[in-house]
Image 1 (cartoon, rainbow, N blue to C red):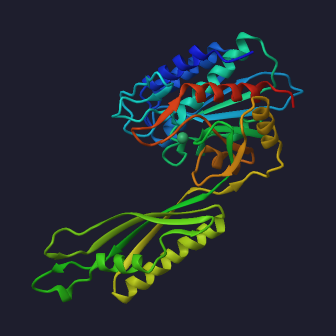
Image 2: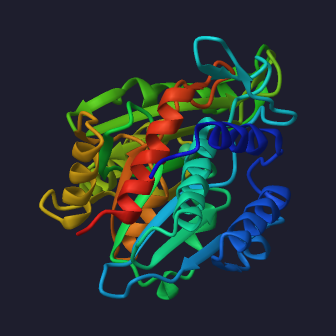
Image 3: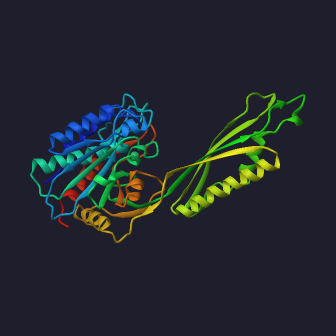
Length: 372
Ligand SMILES: [Zn+2]
């Protein structure tokens, strides 16, 4: 029993060569659908594409297995962040794999896709025993899990999920992830000539600056952070700016804390605006909701046992990043996010290694086939 090392690296290289930016995963979707079909997996594509304005739906696969064993869900996302068009995997002698330098590599999350495909291939090739296996390849994960948000989880029978979408050494898994609330504040002031009649204007940028200067920024407490990441406004150096748009986010492993922090931000904009006779709009968007999978849940013991079998050091962590597992948790399925051989993600120097790709494929295969 084992992974075919040449085949999985070829598979990963092939996946990287397919353009698959968020909302334009069509080609990738067709490719993995064919793969799953050829492995005897029943495949359904949902209508997420139409619902979210993309050209491909979520790809759900079901492989029948021994019904005395628990059904398990394996999930990875098909989309990659920009710059992503024309990606190619360049393998060095030391086993590291990088892009050509002007795009991301797409190890996030194609190492996960490749590992799941390779594990299923080995199962079929060697006729290995397994329970029912469900696969979910989502679209538009990188834009706040738009694909998984519209997936119908009622068709999922698994009560345990492994989401391959985490940085760190293979053997690492996250059981807790934050709520992410993103906000846009639009401060409305009043334009006026900056030289002739500045006193007749209401300075929207100054109002925003005042509000921001009164806020704690960065780490709020050990489970909460806040950031203002974008600011824009003003039309010319000789005009009192009548509008300023401020965008930011709050994250917390505690959903109530995240909401409370967002409310404090809104209140500060209210104070600063009213002091200057400005008005403001505050739009809050819940990008993800925090979860914590119980440490004693079988999804974690299975993971730890599988790592032990492969002699991988185990690290169970909390993450400050969102993933499809936030949506899976909201749907009542206990999941963990599993490190899948990706590093420096969302940057052109993103990389993976041959060794780690083989490890995550091995781990995925072990999770799919081990005895309870
Ligand atoms: Zn990812």
